[in-house]
Length: 332
Image (cartoon, rainbow, N blue to C red):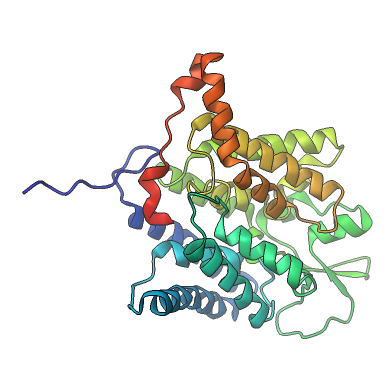
């Protein structure tokens, strides 16, 4: 009998299978949530776990309703729930959050054919929340409070409202607290974006394990920095504030919603970074990663075709056009 071949990681060194890759990413997200809970809000971690398990329950329920069979949920669905929980306010009402999770799991992973529409499920859920629950997704409150005596703001919110840049050292280390001029109570943003150094550290680990491709993340950060310079926005502040680094590690590197070619992934990261900076510069929301990543996802087939068309003009691009999407069918 032929020996079962182990599914290899498309990016590099280890022979870790897809389930192992997803558990590695899930572990990093769990540690990120634990860090936020220990440092800022002890009640957050149980809430985070609840969202993850409810995401798995939604996938199980979908399988039961469609096929009448009880199917064990995929690890990637837990990753989607974890990413969504880490990218919204820690005290966002549970009902809107679960509505966004339902859209992400059912429409982003179960119903839509991912080979036809390449959209990151978490981004789809975030977009739904921004369109339907615009107020709760921008409501920031200190732990244990239902209402704030003074207006609260994240560093990005403060910049959007007053044009004031929060201290870079405090942003990097996640030391966001106190108030500004007695007008704004400073609060950290979404749990996933609080400490950029932690996201970078986990990104290096995941790359070393063969889970991530570095190209879209580097292109995203580089394009974002160039766009910020062109728009005369403080580059280091915008790189450290918000979810830019978190997105470059966990979101734009999603292999199922990005182009299959190496050149295409470079272009996708560049598109997402430039649009993110443009939305921050002139947009209703202080953050712009949802629109940037969504545009890159929708353009993924076009960018692959462009990379294929350019292979005759630039041979190095042609040599690097090696689609790997078929290896990731288990993630769909």
